[in-house]
Image 1 (cartoon, rainbow, N blue to C red):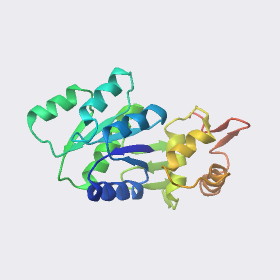
Image 2: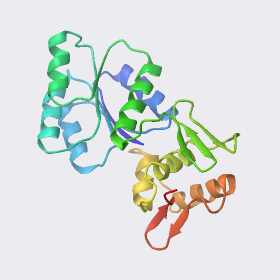
Image 3: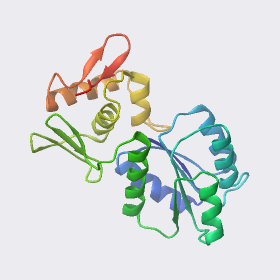
Amino acid sequence: MRLLLVEDDDLLGEGVELGLRKAGYAVDWVRDGEAASAALSYEDYDLLVLDLGLPKKSGLEVLKDLRDAGDKIPVMILTAMSSIDHRVAGLDAGADDYLTKPFDLPELYARLRALARRHTGRTEAIIEYADIQLNPAAYEVHKAGEKVDVSRREYAVLLNLLENTGRVMSREMLEQTMYGWGEEVGSNAVEVYVHHLRKKLGNDLIRTIRGIGYMIEKE
């Protein structure tokens, strides 16, 4: 999943960015509200983690502009502003969840997984397809009850395809789930990861739609 992190504290931002990457997210990090609005205007993100006390433009303004534009991206507010009034203002402005600093990374991960589930219409924590199980909380994939080792980017491709069964995903769409800014994208990266997934999970799982992209059929 592609995630935008908006945090002006360098130390905290570095820690959260690193943790989110290890948890399987492709992360872009900006440090002020104007940069956040610019990024949201030209990139497609699956999740937004937003501080409120930002330079140049407040997080609340970023959020209000986002919702006024009709953008329904799930938004997690991550802030030191912990009063009831701040929480109410953030939620009323369109935030989906609110986490105050200091916080534990595992709780942030769990809340983001919950936001992603709600946004995609999923209620179950584990994604099941035929004999394949994908567990986002444990970052694990099983086939016929046996654990299958997958890389971070193989996992990202599989998650995206399983959450969009019956829909063709272009190579560019899949690349967005695997790479943040500054990360080099190989010319045939998606093809390589799809090839690895087929070897591990079965050749018939992922269909190639020639000239368009890839898909997993609806069950």
